[in-house]
Length: 304
Image (cartoon, rainbow, N blue to C red; front, side):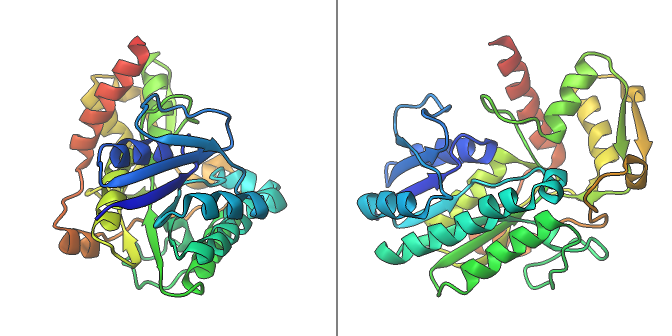
């Protein structure tokens, strides 16, 4: 059945991947939006409008005019340390903006799809399933939990998708961990990588595919979408070097405490994805499968 989908944050990494997957399906009428004047994704098969989702009036007007069945919020302030320094600004982007989308969604009975994070957990007993009790350690995690709670209290027409350690390649996106690592190792630079932070490295393409399937099947509630393998950042870095054919000896393991980061990180984190796998008949990509796709995209983008 024909559905209208609005994607916010469409110029970010996850936003661009969502635009790619939804624009391929003619059962969806797609409108993308972001703060920028134009879409970074070059596909002409979707509409794009600039939108500041922290402006409630502008959000309501756009949603009322387009009347989407789904509003997928891929916009977020994701710099975890900056969230500690710029609490008012990051709260506006991560919580107030979500409240604006919820208010607009009520006007046309849209389902709000909120992308959340394993950082709502304390990282003491991961990986976590959908029913685990949140206990965020940093301000970013508290903001994302507040956004989840706003969505949950909005009624029954919502979907929360938690993920972690998202990486990938797309035009003009901010550096993610894998992108930074690949660029450094390519230039034969030595890198320090933490060996005590665990999660499921998740290729943005795989996350977008999971969200697409959840929407296609009309799911509601909380779902975890993440890569198939659970490992430390250091193990992931060594695997990336192996797949790319880079020198693994350039990677030095360190502890999180050595970094003296402003925001406390959950260490034994990660997500259990059995619910999404069983309900959608999906298998998420292993790290090796993901890195082979990532390598192709990385080399292709470098050649442009």
